[in-house]
Each structure stands twice: as C-alpha cells, then as structure tokens.
Image (cartoon, rainbow over the protein chains, first blue to last red):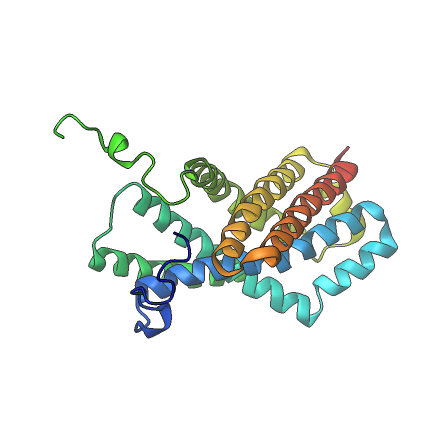
Length: 127
Length: 123
C-alpha cells in the first residue's frame, strides 16, 4: 500500500512558485527572527556566566559584547525581538479567530513592521 | 450533524494526531514573554556598559535578577519549542533527530548556565 503509485500523484504547488506576499513574508520573518535570536541569547548567557566567574572573564565577555560585532548583533537582535514579539501578538490574535481577513492581516503586517522599527529606535535612544 | 460540536468534528482529523499541547505551551510562554522581554531589555540594557562592580551590585538586587532568571527560563523554553518546529519542517530522517536532540541540550544547557550565573551573583 505504501509503495503504490508513488511519484505519479498530484503535488501541492511548491512554495517558490508563489509571488512573495506581505502576510506570508512577515510570518516567515517571525520564524527567522525568533531562531536568529539564539546568537544574542548565547552571548548574554556567556556575559552572565563571566559576570559570576570574575573580573578577568567578565572583561573578555563584556569586551566582546561591546565590540563592533557585539554591538551589531545586539542592535539587530533588538529589532528582531521587537519584530518577533509583534509578530507573535499577531499570531495570538489570529489564533483567537480574529483579523483573519486578508486586508486586516496585511494591515497588521504593516503595523508590525512600523512598530518594530519605532520600538528599535526608542530602545536605542533610551539605552 | 447538527448536534456535533466543533471539537468532535476536529478530534483525530490531523495527520499527526497530537500537537495541541505543544501549541498551547507555546501560547503560554509567548504571553509570558510579552511581559518579560521588555522588562529584560530595559533592565539589562540599562546596566550593560557599566563597570564590573556596578553590574555585580545591580544584579544583587532581586528585581533585575528575577527578571533575568525568568526571561532566561521562559525564553529558552520557548526557543526550544520553536526551533524544534523549524527543524521538523525542513530536516528529515537522522539529521532531524540529531539536530532536535542537539538543540534541546543547547537550549536547556544555556538556560541552566545562565540561571546559575545570575543566582550566583544575586545570592
């Protein structure tokens, strides 16, 4: 049964044939940002472990965190986490059965992008 | 048919037969993180860049330390679940198993070391 007619069945269209759309792209970026945040999370764990270890270890971790590379990762992660949060809120709203119409989903996508950029600017100014 | 509930119609229809609990736990942790993450960004961000002694004193206070511990715990729990979904979507066979095991170990390992470090400073 399992081997019958393999390869001759109709397949659902592959993802790549679709034109990129706002709703799908904003959703894919939620996944991307969420997983990319691992880099910053591991850096922060290293920073805390070094803090508990002693001044020398802390100087190394803190120096890395505040180098141009660490700064870049933290800046991008600041945007990523705000974006991921607003995307997650959109998913929670969708899960409650609300805002599922295309126009409302697209409007929420635009709000997500704008809100994440504004919150990133706000965070950078405050901190 | 008129007496059938939405639940009765849906039970057992999916290909995986399970997964509701995974989704529900993801919802719980995401709602918790909506509260925790902004607090962590602004407590951690406020002290980052200060001298070693100041940071030690800062994380000896219960509120910044508590926020850090909770964010690490819930954050890595949420990440573990999310990254597993990513792997299950794009990787097949043995590499899938190896990757899932590796990411679970990494997530819980990082959470444990992070929490231990904050507690070591705080207590």
